[in-house]
Image 1 (tube, rainbow, N blue to C red):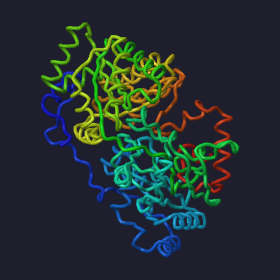
Image 2 (cartoon, rainbow, N blue to C red; image 1 turned 90 degrees about the vertical axis):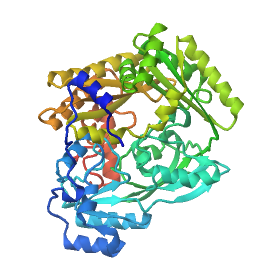
Image 3 (cartoon, helix red, strand yellow; image 1 turned 180 degrees about the vertical axis):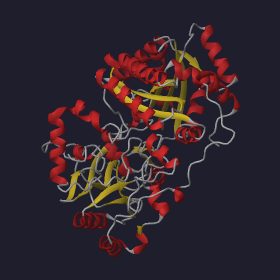
Length: 533
């Protein structure tokens, strides 16, 4: 059950005038979406069936609808309205790298766009079935490449098929006493290949590292052949690191079929803590000291700081328990508290207690107030539920979206204010005032991420509403000197801002790589780079 209770609806009514619908709008069933007529030639269809077997080549309406996009607001809104215009013409399910190569060759021969598809969790338009000027679009579903290929327990390294989902990877590693330690909010559906292709960051990346910090190598099928990038050693001085061209390439340069990554000892023990601070400024200063003075091996594995607005919303929706925490903080001088959640994991209880004590000394020095650890436990229990709640709220006519960035400590507070004001101001001007909240979820010695969640009533044209907010927030991010994306990737949503971040020369280098590896422009058209690029 992911819907809001009566108390939560009361809060939204007071804040933004939202009312629950007696009969929420239900999404059009996927099988009933209006799909475009197939543009796939019989010759191409026959070639795909001969290569993979008829059972692994689908033009069933359900399969086409399931591959028309990811989880961005435009993707979800269009699907809810029955708009299947972005659906591919066919979905194929290769069994191994060789079959991926054969499919790619068929696409080259028949002028077909090829869209790699893992868990379908992109929130930036990264998997929609765009043809890019090609005759038809093929969605390449990698779910059958889902095995643990190799495990090296001595080196703490594992190689996975790209289609292996997060829970499958954990289930494969845990009997050997290991974990990937990578838990993005999309964990239940996202895949290893998707993690690498988008430079994913998990909720415990402060402790375990982002995927680009842990990936050692990848096998990538391109129209020019198979690229084996990295994987030989933990470090190398053999020229520029080709692996970095594939990490974050979003399927535009090639299809990742295998990834070799560092793994970690499965923790047997855990400590949790919740602290509150009098301001975002004080809390950010505490996190900065944790990162810069304690260092990677001592600081918490999870550091999550809510701003005062996200804290206010969280406590308001928590009922009597939330009110009690709010009162407790207020009595100690925190009128608009900012909650912070911390988790430490490991296998040595004494070492965990010592790490926790070292962190809490820092938190106390910055005026932090210790709250019950149960708050952190409750967050942990519900940390994957956000996407499901959004689906329910959309049925009640609410516009719900997220965006994220990252910047240095020197720019953090300015960026935080500018982006939040851009979001709130744009929605207010459209006559749909919003709740705009933010949290820090990834902490580095040099800076931190900022993750915004905002909701308002839908405007008359929700897609125009989304575009206006995205444009205003994106400009505020660029003007602040922050990155256009910390872990969601570029896709189509941030494509136009990419040049502002990497510069014309940098964009030219990316285009050159695209031309070298994919001269016909078959791979994931319009993602990362514009189609004509």
